[in-house]
Length: 161
Ligand code: THU
Image (tube, rainbow, N blue to C red; front, side):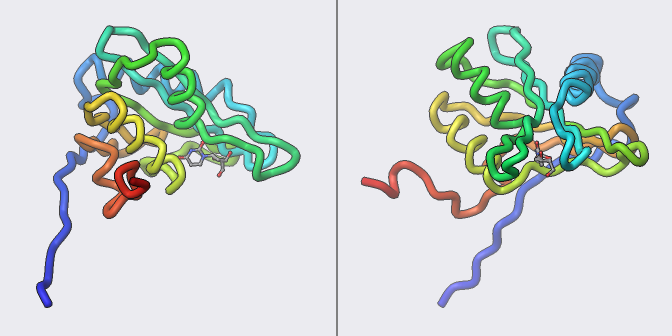
């Protein structure tokens, strides 16, 4: 038996104001997307904005449903938009943030497991990692160089064949 270690590097930025202008602008776009979320059941409005390698910005927000499981997360709305509008174009960076009804959000949001799986598939299909910026309205921002780091032992297409 061999003991192994899984680890990855990421960056912790103490405040949005410390971000490079391009990253701050992408996070602002994600915040605007969150304002357009349809989240009457959770009151947890998530917004995502991606900078594609061709310079286009794609956005997504969570879309809930009275039949709760039908709801879809901001990240997967964004990935669907990207795939339809710019097929095959890689995502350089993807910013994700959220708005709470009761107070300003201050912890970085973390994509749910289903979105991690979807983000990883997107990275595989365009052969490029997605740089993630995870933030709340206030406080720290986390920057990761690839989504797959968040999903060790991911289930991938080669497992099917
Ligand atoms: N949600 C997202 O859109 N993205 C995430 O990364 C986490 C959760 C949504 C799903 C649901 O509409 C609401 O946030 C509360 O879970």
